[in-house]
Image (cartoon, rainbow, N blue to C red; front, side, top):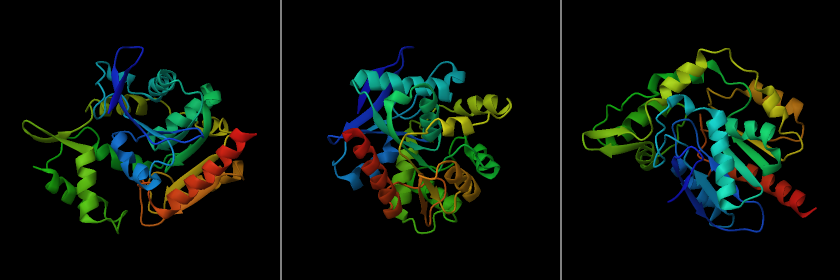
Length: 283
């Protein structure tokens, strides 16, 4: 684990492993997740690509922000650019899971020159209401489970319809990534005030995010969709493909929101994306 300091004084955690001649992968996690979500991808890649995984402010080992309204895509995008500057990186391929994909699209609009390509993991310019409602049920709510094993059982009971073939061992590994043990038992490993930030944003008119997707024009782009996803609909992916006929699309079976990224379909889409990225970099 490494850290860098943002321009407003927070220490944010990231990992940096592997190496390659091409642009590195910068992995950005979902709303409540952290950089450990990309351990499976890193293992599947086996070090053949440099992989940097950022834990966004307020999550995991990164500092909590005393102002919860700073938990927004704009400031998180600024944090990403500051990390790139800290590491001396010109361009990266962003692997954006859910919230991380929204950040990637925003960066395409404001700092496109820093992007070599983008993989959107179960996210697009339209977000289905069913998925948002499901997220609000648990967002910022302390777990009832007494330990990681109980939390894993609860995850399985809640999510097995979307993820029918996930093993008990994987549910346990997920519980260890998404919760932490505190002095009084299991707790969230992110700032509960993330909920307040989402509620504040939800009170505003929903923005049109299609211009952000259109800002990806000219960049190699791939999108993954869990076949059972309740956040990214098949209709939205079809509309994305209509606007970008060169879009790499992968439907990941037995996955909801979000794929783990080590599935054969996910890895094939990433490989196809990197072929285009490396080709563009060599010209």
